[in-house]
Length: 519
Image (cartoon, rainbow, N blue to C red; front, side):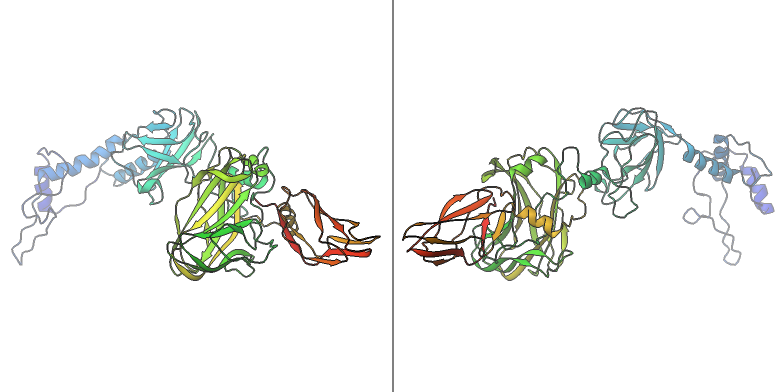
């Protein structure tokens, strides 16, 4: 150990007081100090120097010598680097020390060589030899200080299998407003034998989460294709845009119904936008030019039939959609999931979950994720209903867009699945089918009036969900009575025709019409 050179006067004075026994380290308290700090002698102002005290000298000496002795270093007069080496040795010891786990499964604990007495600083590291496997969410409490949760590198609670007996885990203490309410948490950055949690992959070289993989390829028994909502891209449209009313009705985009409530509706349509400001393709469902009074609310609804919903039975799913509006102020959006009490009969249903309200700012397209960690669907084998509610209040000639709607298995929503138009059209035709002009056509000769002229039939390109509803059909008739529906099913329509007189009879539908098996 080596001390700095002192003046002759100070040396002999210090030599004298070092013979006295001090108590402990503290700031200087000798005569002439200023706020416990040393003051130099000033002969011009007749200011004496601060008086050295035995307490202070002995405190400095014992504190420094104590550092050396704790590390097993013998003090040496000729070595001026011993304290620095001792501190470096302590730092290295902390870095290389593996602590023994003295906790229990899911509640881990350890004792440090230099015990913590309060919550550690941001970035503090601990390495622990794990004694028991974890089976779910877990905590860590070194030296008996406050228990804090352990999160994985994806900043989510552990699920089980991340910490295994005889493995070595490295924890980093992180203090962040978004983590554990800002109260700090231990993040598991490595585990020598356990599974590792990662953040969702967003680039081509990122590690992928298991949930993302399942969403992409499907779990055992899962239906293929990630997006379980048909026409979520809003690219298939079979109707003209109807006016918005207080009754639910299907709009221009197939399979999506809309309505208003809470006030009078004086304007608005349920249309398809081909140049929408939200989403990648410009295609979107649009509630256009909406005028509402009072506590107005808009609703958009999608219904999934039991044949598809049963494949999501007791699964966890995530929902996402892109939305935008031009109300001029933030508007709250809420999503409600329901299931019918009988197969495909939505007149009586039960709520699965209602999301929290999300304030969507005006003029900004946002990706709405109502349940960030997924939602348990339970037994939804009778069907599934998704309703987006917009508490817009009284508005005049405002617009609301919905694009890229996606429901998928798993806890992590993945990027929207853009299906080909041919694939989407094929799926839509199970519920909505456009029958072109002249699809029903009859030409025949009859011997007398009111004779059976024959039948005309339209076969569907696919099996529809159920026998479709058929609107009034515009006919062109030559010596023919109005055709009568003879047979209808989920694969075809057949009409019979009687003549009005003998001779040539012709009948055909002269305009396009839409038949529907939507729920």
